[in-house]
Amino acid sequence: MPPFLYLRDKLLQSNNDRERYRNYRYKRQIGSAQYTGNGRFEGYIMELLVRIGDHIRGIDFEFEVELVPDNKFGAPGDYSKIWDGMIGEVVRGKADVAAGPLTVTTSRQTAVDFTSPFMSSGIQALVLNPNYAKHNPFRIIYPFTIEVWFLHAFVMFLVTFFLFVFNRYDPYEWKALAEKMEAEEEKAKNFSYFNSIWFCTSTLFLQSSDSSPRSNASRCIAGFWWLYLLAMVFLYLTNLGFFITSNQRLAFIKDINDLKSQHTVKFGTVLGGNTYHYLKGNQKALWHKMNNDHANVYAKDLREGVERVRHSNGFYAIIGETPELNWVAKQKPCDVKVVGDYLARTQYAFAVAKGSPLAEHITAAIETLRDSGVIADLEKDWWHTDDRSTYCHNLTVYERSGAYSYTVNDISGVYYMLCIGIGGSVLLFLGELLYWNMRGGTHHSIPKKQKPQAKERFRGRDNYGSEPQKNKLPPPDPNMWI
Image 1 (cartoon, helix red, strand yellow):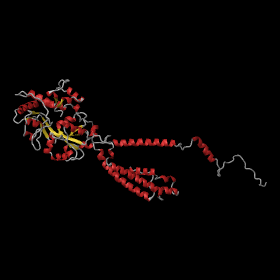
Image 2 (image 1 turned 45 degrees about the vertical axis):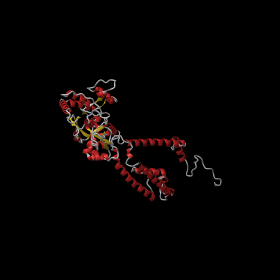
Image 3 (image 1 turned 45 degrees about the horizontal axis):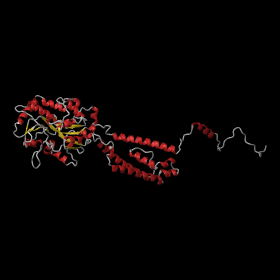
Image 4 (image 1 turned 30 degrees about the vertical axis):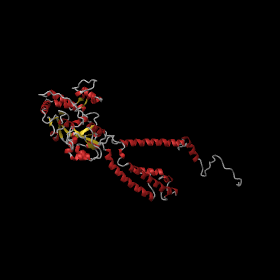
């Protein structure tokens, strides 16, 4: 696993790694020929072995690096007690030195001899950065299942239907009162089907409506509808925050113990790795929680585990060794971070066969490199510990607050629903306007030029509704006596 040891061909597959290789101060000339021998590998271990060869005394230290077939560090079998991995290669004499991030453990010390440690390590957890957690924008509907939402819609239209029926046939409802001239004519349509829908919709959001039911039957069903709404709205709002802040909960995972005490984020480790065997032998609570999980929480290697963390939207974390996790966290796109204190402190060292004189020679070279500061310089080069510009954790104040506050990503579903509502209202407006014009409708306002004529004609009528005869005497009565 980078940066300890990896094939150079794979190193050059990405542009970022190619640039990092070319800028490395100990770079070798890159040719077009196929790499062979030790030239196939690159990494911190290769650099350290070269430096050990330069500083070792008393022997000619020449080495040839080979990968173990099973790609394991080494552990005894559950039943056969035969060692596998690098430790097994040394025990069986197929390798003189096991070189890598090999953790010094009590069980391994019974099978091989370790040199002086060249690096301190530990066990921590790698989680997704909360600012990179992306969830369904419409998770605001998550407090209820899809069946409950459909049941809400059914109940709403059922209440609407009964309000409409009661208004149509109940003699004490607005329609009957309007027909008996005991109420205004417009109130007959207070609880038409569409107005009944509007009544249920407005009260759904705890708003007042244009009118209220008149009959006892309608008031009864409206009262129980309001009671139903109070219960459902309370249940919805009390559970909404849990789903909205699902990515923010990652910010409150401070260490592995926080992972152990929650049930949302699954966590695992590399199957058969150093951390796997440590948890199995020393952390029974974590071990049982991982094994009792229905989901497969183990990864084939750290690369697979990191990819799972990045694609889980914060619902998976991997427990591993600190140097490897720190190296991953400092690589682009900077979407993961190491959290918590050390669950355990460990050390890396080389392993040789029991009684091999190589242990003493390699130990002396490592101590010389440590005293001269060479090992510290190698760590700075490979982990960028002295380059502040490469840190992925130098978040701004805004980015840090985004891990604990509501962001646009958290409540994006609300904005989407508002846009849907605006778009729907515009479409309805255009539809109503088109329907009105297709029916040949006109505006009800009277043209201004006709208003004076109508007013003058109205004022000119007498009490009998006939036009008066201006400046004209009535005809004489022939029967009138003069």
